Image (cartoon, rainbow, N blue to C red; front, side):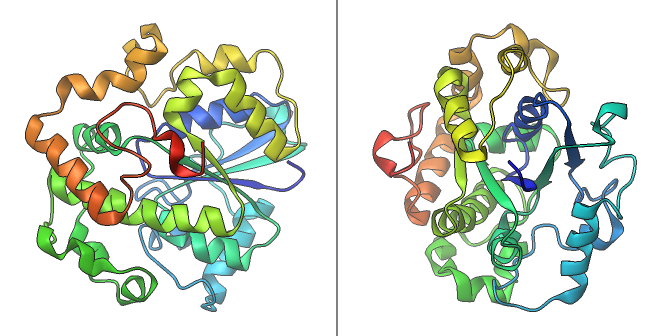
Length: 285
C-alpha cells in the first residue's frame, strides 16, 4: 500500500465499515466520499454517477482528483476520519462511493493508484438504499450516451427504465456494478465480497494484505466485529450469518424476483442469486 488506495463501491454496500478496517493500519489518512451531493468537494459532486470513456481527456476532472490525492483539496467532511497522527501519514485511502461508473476512467488515467472494489448482494444494498432515501433513477443512466457505447443497455429495455422504486435502484446497481466488475478484472484490482469478509474475516483480510503489501495489526479484528457509524446500532450484536442474511427476512417475493431477473439480464447471476453468499464459481472467490 505504498500508493494511494481507492475504495470503489455502490452506496450502502458496507464501504464505511471497510474504511474503518483499512484505517486500523497505523498512519492511514482517509479521504472520505468527496462526491457526496451535499458535503463533498464542489468540483467532484457533478461527476457522481457519471460515466466517462477511459481514454477521454478531461483535464479539469483530472486536476480535481490530483488535488484531492495531494491534499490540496479537502473539507471537514472528507477529512473527518483523520487526526493528529495522520498529519504525517504513511498510507492513504480514498473512499469513492458514487464513482463506479468513473472507475474505468480513473484506472486508465491514474496508473499510480491502487484499486479495491467492494460488492455486496444487491438485495441487501437496494433495500438499504431505499430505507435511507436513496432513489436512484435508472433513466439517469439510460440518458448517458457514452455509457451506451461502453456496455449494451438494451438488455434492460424490457424493464422500461423506471424513475424510482425498487426496480429502478436494482437496474442502477446492476449497471454500475457491471461496469466496475469489468474494470477490476481488466486492471487487476482487488475485489472484496462483503459476505465473505463477514463469514471468513481472517482469510479475506489475508488476501487484502497480500494485495496491499501490508500487515494489519491485531486490533483490526476488533474493528471487523463492530458496525460502522453509518449502520444501524443493533447490527454489532448480530452474528456474521445474521448480518449477511437480514435482507432475506424483509424482502418481498416480488422484489426478490426483480433481483433475480435483473441479475440474469445483466449477466451477473454467476455472482449473486437467491442464496446469501456469492457464487463460488465466478472466478473471483
